[in-house]
Length: 238
Image (cartoon, rainbow, N blue to C red):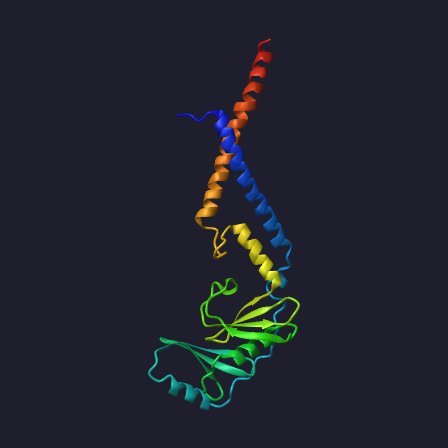
C-alpha cells in the first residue's frame, strides 16, 4: 500500500509544524540558559571561613567512642560547622554527629540549619524562615530527606537547603536558578522531574524529526527535482 503524495505532504506539513515549534522552544531555551550568568545561577560566590581548630583534648573522642559502643561504624570524618568541629560517624543505622570537643550529639534543628545557611550567604542577608521539608521539591530533587529549607530576605529570593542529618549545605537556589531550571525543563522536555534526556517524549520527537527529514527529501525530489532533471535531459537531447 502506497501513501498518495498529497496525503504525505499533508502529514509532513502538520508534523513539520509541531517539530518546528519544538525546535523553536529548543533554540529559545538554549539561548536563555546561555545568557543567564552561571555564578548567579549557582548562588553567587562561596563564602570562605577559616577552619576551626581541632580540639586538643581526648575527652570528646572518648565520649564519642562510648556513645558509639556496639554500633557498626563504617566511616568517620571531621566536618567544620559554624562555631564548632563535628565528628561525623556513619553507622548501620545512619549518620550521627558529635561535638569533637565534648562528644555531645549534635542535632540539626532549625537554629543550627539557619546558622549553617547564614554562614554560607555571601551578603549576610537576614533569614525569613526555616522549615523542615516533608517532601522533596524540584530544588533538591536529587537529595534525600530530612532537609531544612532556609529562606533569605534578599533581592534574589534565595533559599538554602541544609541536610537534616549532616548539617551540610546541599543547594543554594534563587530566582536566577529557578529561571534556568524552567528553561532546562523546556530544553530536555522532562516536564515532571527535569533530570533526564532519556525519556519517551524526546525519543518520539527525535524519531519524528528524522521521519520529517526523510520525507522532506523524498517530497523535494518528487515535486521539484524530477521536473528539473527532465528539463535537463530534454536540453541535452537537442
